[in-house]
Length: 229
Image (cartoon, rainbow, N blue to C red; front, side, top):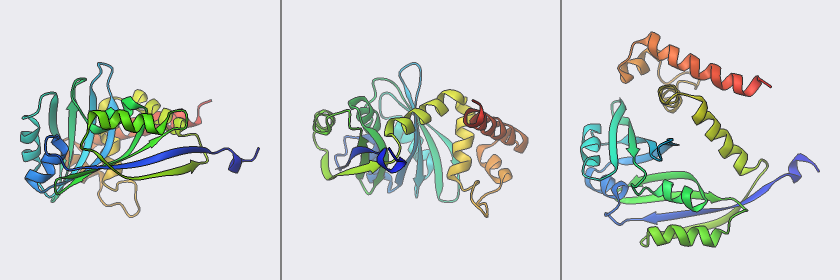
């Protein structure tokens, strides 16, 4: 069997919801911000840490808004001119779109909210019934509308990619993961770099040596995982 033959077919589904009872929808409607999911990390106590990029709204307003919802906490990780990265901590009982999708058997790939409309994309591996996953998700969010459903082929198992992401989450400390994600999302690894390490350290309110040490340790752990056999 050739590499091209080793593919996995998944079902990709896109949803939209504009019901303001959901925090992500209400947040963009009330503040006029745009929100984009960067990373979601499960914690051992059943809670989740979720990083969002927030544009066109004061980050302090986002933190204040989160206090109105049970099971939600928020803190600003970085604050740029018009974009901030906000960390949300959601306890095990808090409803959240991507968490509900994960529990149903799907793998969320995109979550964004603009002008009071949230758009969610997820991929459902072939070992699950796509209809069952969708039905379960819509039972939790009955106002959710399906706007697209299609099949996609991957040359590598979708679960292998998810297992890699889970392994990285277990390997890094929360602070190492936060710094690495922050550097990546702010163009530190692009060329030319969009921001220097010193600029990122200032936004994180840490010294540059502290920032660099967290980054080096995270990179070393990832490289060890890849090259150690």
